[in-house]
Image 1 (tube, rainbow, N blue to C red):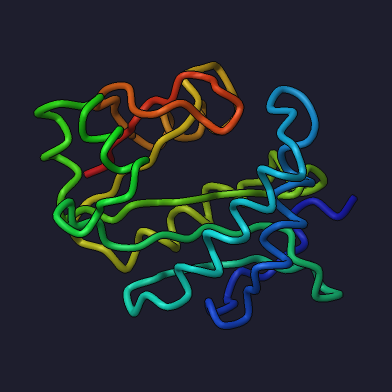
Image 2 (cartoon, rainbow, N blue to C red):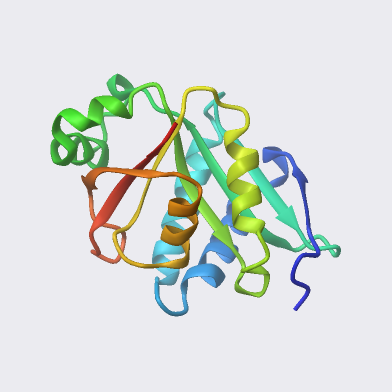
Length: 178
C-alpha cells in the first residue's frame, strides 16, 4: 500500500473506458457498496459515450508505476438536452428542485482504489475537477452513511432531494455544491 504516493495531473485523454471499469469495480466490489462487474461495465460504457462530449472534464491520479488509482469525471448539465429515461426520472423525482441542476456541472463518477483511500485523494480529485467550473456542481450518491457521503458533507455539499436509485437499487440522494 502506497497511500499518498500519486500524481493527479493526468488529462482526460489519458483515461480510457477499460481503466474506468477496472478501477470502479475495485473501488466498489467490497463493503459497503458490493457493486457488480456488470455495474462497472455500465459505467465504462457511459464514460466511453461521454468521450464525444466537448465539455467532458476528467481528472485521474496514477501511482508511480502508471496504475490508475483514482478518477473523477463529469460535464455541464443542461436539462433540455437530457432526454434519456434516467434524466426524466431525475426530473420527475426532484420536481421543482430539478431546475437547480440546470447549468451546473454534473459530477458523474468519483472513484478511488481501496489501497489509496483515507489519504485525501478523493478530495483532491473532486477539487481539481470542480476548479474549472464557476457554475456550481451536483451529483447523486447513496443516501447512506458512506465514506463518499462523509466527504461530500465535509466539503459543503447540500441535499437537493432524492433522485433515481443507485445501480444497486438503493435510494439516490442529489447533492448540490455552490
